[in-house]
Image (cartoon, rainbow, N blue to C red; front, side, top):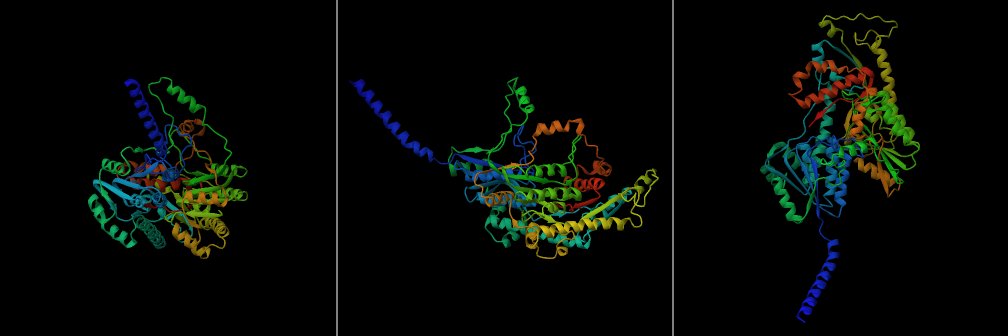
Length: 605
């Protein structure tokens, strides 16, 4: 009897337990979110897309769009309790600062966003300024001291090696050639640079003011002091706490529960996992690689995104085992755009332009493809850090243009010229005796400066191209320009905000804004975003580079100058070295494309 009673009591207890657990089942569904999404901003983000099928993860870093999409998803995910941003002194483009800052501030409307750094600089701080709580490590520092930039002038170097630069421009403010022709800026260039930097600085201060909920005058006060320790940054109101990374973890657990899990790869694409203890794992991996990427034909409506990223060049990309020149090549962009004309599921196209320009001919090829595509479906442009000169050329006929307030754009003008190298060769005792047939046969030869009449001939050709450029702008922006085209063009460079006021762009917004607005215009509720052409993964790029049939046979004009100074400067001043490499790369383009739509190179930090 006692045993039966014991059993009954046990069954009763079990039933009660089951009842409570079942009652709690509904509660489990409404349990507190269990994930903290952690995003690493200590590495730079590229404007270029990354592969849809990454091998060994996303080699070379994450794309800006991938990062912002993940942030947006975390903000809307019911299982995410909070978002943590780990940031530092990373360098971001000025437009990236605006775009990232906007995404983070918007995410903070839905979820608590906590930002932490060991050290920070102005741009990175502006990115996270919209976070609910910002902390620095003890002994950390914050350099909130404004923006600093430089332009480079190579005339002294060219004189030193005996090279005579010969360049012509269309537009008094078209200053790209001054890098080679002068030792300092012209009056027009100095004026233009001031208004450009004023615009960038005001935009940066406004981003911080909006993020921290203070007025611009307060931000100006912070900037004028400039350097802060972790403690003085907190006292000034720049940050909210001084704590280690462990201290941040403890704070988050106290706030959201000790059981929360920190997901450092939230929604991030990863490559296949390899079991190193399995001798057949490598064979399996290579089988997957050699079988090619897995393609699935989608039946969803789509918005296509085509990236014009880097210097604009004519033809196809050439790859060799010794490296390749990155940039936007006309043949690849043309094919990508033309492939979308009759693609039924692609309802609209966003062209993401992040380029300081380049070849005039390649820019026209790309623009013509955009115009053909626009006859069949809507095409809008989203501008990144740069969309200047050729970058604006390819943009100006789109039905709508989006820019960041800190995008560098405009630079409507033309540059052409050459380097005359006879004196350089003469210094080492080598003479080249020219032989020519035809009055203009040597006009582009590097053996001598322009002869009588050659400058006029080249300027006439450039003026024709300049006229076509301005016609494209006035046609594409008909009824939108705030001033006559000659008062806007002439090589003048603008921020996105200034370009909006002049009617060169339609709206301030990010790539995601351009995509979502286009989808809304097309009345698309359920759609996907396709990157066209598909981005190659790491191994596909490696195979391309090892393909002997695709070796780069182009002669690099800049190599001689670079090899002369590289041993001295390469390890001393890395920022200026990167800038020098960009400037010298323009010489390579001029060796192939004598008329250029290229903007001056700015280094801004």
